Length: 262
Ligand code: DGL
Image (cartoon, protein in one colour):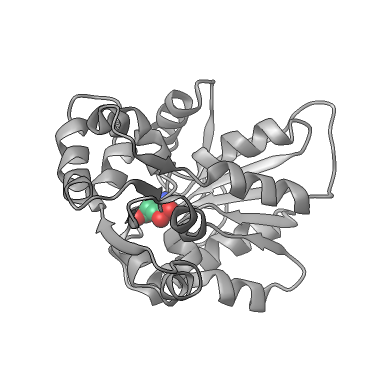
């Protein structure tokens, strides 16, 4: 069983790539919507929440767990790998390396949560891969909320996207890194703001999905088995996930405190 975890519905951007790569693999998605957003929470709390959700997936037979959340990966990936050596964890992190390779202006913008941008993991990525590129960090707390509220494609989104992108564009960034898994769902308004400028937007979800698919050597089924779980409101999850994935999704509720399902 393959597990995909995020604080909310953002990880579905990785899920849809993975489901296309492995149509016959059983897959389980877990959204910790009782605690979304993770971005403003202290790292210790994000680590604790992530550890609890990862354990829930492992207890249900997941042998590969995708932490499809940059914030949770930044806070918890090392601890998870140390605590669960029999599980393979695939994380999400801002794509600094390809961004530094592709920029022509020498200026790269990274869109992520504050927690990701403050993490030691992110500092290490910069030290290893930024090279000569100037990296401008832009925390975008409202973007996660837009997606979780189902407002990604409504007129509400445009001014909120514009306010965060404009300073990066004015500073000369010609490559933008989507450093949060919620953000690929905002690509239509992002491209509206970019207005055909020569700016490359890096969405790392296909690469994360390819890595997870490489590691998965578990069961293959004739009938696809897809399970969706949330610690929040299953009706809200189902409506959102159905709209984002363009298919009928039925989410079930996990009791967030005990970790037991209803
Ligand atoms: N989707 C998550 C990420 O990739 C963060 C969202 C949140 O703040 O909970 O960072």
